[in-house]
Image (cartoon, rainbow, N blue to C red; front, side, top):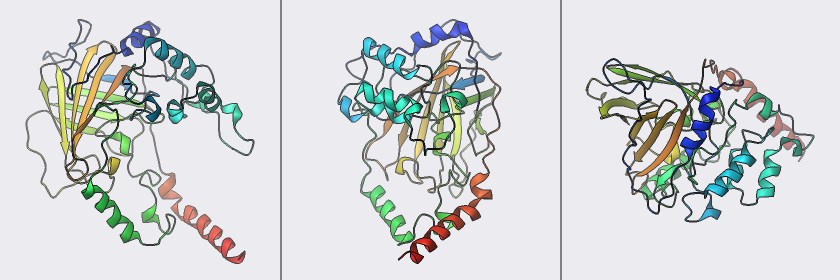
Amino acid sequence: MRHRRLAASLIAVALVGWLTPVASAQAPRPEAPVPDQTVPRTADGRPDLSGFWTTQTFTPMERPEYLGDKAFYTEEEWTQLQAQLTVDGADPLARSVIEIADAAERERVLDQTHRDESYVHYDNAIWLATQVPKGLSTRRTSLVTDPPNGRIPPRNDAARARAAARRAERGDRGTFDGHELRPLSERCIAYAYNGPPLQPPSYNDIHQFFQTPDHVVIFTEQNNNTPRIIPLDGRPVIDEKIRMYPGDSRGRWEGDTLVVESSHFNDRLAWQGSGRDLTVVERFTRVSADRIHYTFTVEDPDTWDRSWAAEIPMMATEGPMYEYACHEGNHDIRHILEVYRNIERQETEGQ
């Protein structure tokens, strides 16, 4: 955790670049924007995606319910929210603050000084604030662009039946009854937002890209998995029997856009309730020296009755990245369970 530096000359460009024109309708798969003349290219003529990029944003995945059908903030609303979210001392971890309709309440939640004295925690504004403060990444009211309501489609009968089967298998066991019931993120096994698809983490949100003519590598700073190595040489996907947390990715160029298709996920991460048949199509277009236009479309007939899509701007930032060595949950699982056993014993003795 540390301050990161963005070149001062890019700040104004970044803020302007985040402004998305208001539109009355949104196509499910909008055409990728055309790169400008400042986009660096590799020796083989492809847009150069290599470097450090950040996806930090307060823009939520789903549109807050109080906004209804409002797909975009007005420029005045966006400016007011940016000023409130980027004020000195704002808590970068207060990600749900944008879902609060009342401006005064948003301000109170962003201000860490309102915390109860019994709340023991470090000052997030000191440890997690970035050189360019986290704000809204576009005038969109959600990262989800399709469906037009800005909400992830409801899970279908197959997904609900899958979730019910998991609950039945666990029976009446509590979430602290065994190590296998603890969350994968606590056990430092996998984070759902590491992708695919990529999503903004709470902090340590740098993504480093490496690029050669036949491979692209994506390495996310807050990551428990190995870097994602994406072949571009047309090789077939892996055997159907092999299933992995990040799935299996294959890439290709469509003009100036890198298209990455991923499949072969396991059913343990259950991102957004998805199952083994999840497929993800990502599109990366470097549109300027300091911005990548990133979109993804997901489909899983056993989870949703329709596909859905999202757009997440990626802004240039500076490295280096720091190792995110997550070990606590696995090394300390014994004590996590011991604490809960002690609580259970005290509750029993108190009866």
